[in-house]
Length: 412
Image (tube, rainbow, N blue to C red; front, top):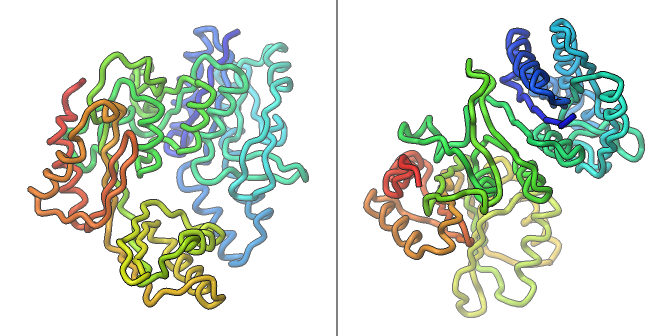
């Protein structure tokens, strides 16, 4: 039988009624002749509640026990989904990560998938099981301990299973009916895309679009997994959603596919850093070791052997970054006269594979922002994206203006 992977996020399994609705969608695919692997998240809000329990119990918690606690939310959902399917006379059983077994690294709370042996689930399909309901977000370490894959890890679980089992498709069910040209809550003209290239989706996911987790898109692109994003809350069981696929599978598209934004950004500047070989390494190595996710980096022109270095990072990592840099200075690894943090900025980006072959996208973007009176603080570019840091109060205006300027409400 062909295999189909269906992943249901937290909002899709938030209540027993929603679990029943999701189970009906699974039943439709079973009736079409598929063996189905269902990946489930914890019920909406459950993981946050469990994380809170851990933090309240032990502020400096053991990461192994953290994983044991927070992974339990998915176990509950998997069991309830299997029971619901059984009530519908569909042969189903639940699987926890260790039962598959989904083997991971030992990096608790941020583990990476190393192997998914297929024989246990395949054997059960051979015995008549039609649906394997797998708890997402979790696996087992070489030491035999439960691990978790980081927030949004159920998306990664689903794509990894689709790759391992050679699934015909991986359907990601969420609370939106596809991938949009921008956030519909900010721009009412936002349009649902029928198709989007892996590279575009990867950039949008990394730049703030919350539809898919970045690692899941990386995996799908590497293993050529056909992804589909669609809503579990829609009454239509045949909705098409958005297909995430190879660039070659898209006949025609706009130069710009979408506008992404990230509200929780900070701009940090090291003032008067010595301009010498190795200075960038002495700055960004301690930041990496402290777990700070640095994004945009700009170095100013050197003057009298000194320069300024600016970078962006998430606002909740500013204190960690400040400590890492002050510690590095105290240890004599580098010197700077001041460290300034601006936590009132946002990142706005335009993304599109068409930018490779079309000049003038950057000029148009900067002209539009200037016409709206929006000052650009930092700029970075890649082959298919342009990102700017601006004052956060102008973020929504910038998104709307760019969406209009590139006419993203119109299909390519």
